[in-house]
Length: 114
Length: 114
Image: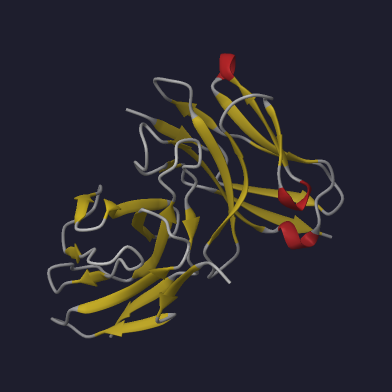
């Protein structure tokens, strides 16, 4: 059963703590993306990766970091430098083939600050 | 730069009534256009997409959308709304080239009343 999984569903962060959100896909997609969603603001791009071992900053990368060591995995770390991390985080992936560039989304992780 | 505008933040319709959600885009070339739906606390599900060809596109759940180049629009329609259609709807445009991220509108929240 192919798809995108995100874990955990809920995550709690204490002040000064780094936390890592997991995103895994078994769709054999080359590209992966991280978005942040806040009420009334739609989706804002944090980072994306078009290929293994390469990634680019999106519109709101400050306070976040990523890695792409494997094709199927694109973890997002929310660092202590991110002062307002409470949000819903969505991971997506897309195939590389021309004419197939459709993004598919995972179920999301809600991050809350204690 | 490319952009997407969804003019309606919130729409309320009666069950059984018709629905049209508006989407206007700004894009320098022939766009790829998408509509996604999001239920509360969930990820985004692809409803339909337009890449080329017939400008009237059929999607899942009885939705359709029409690409009008002269109006830079890609409005989503459904002839008869069901209570289960209550959700947030996002229009997106892209990509500029292979695997560059989609640009999303801020979304339209649909409420359905009996």
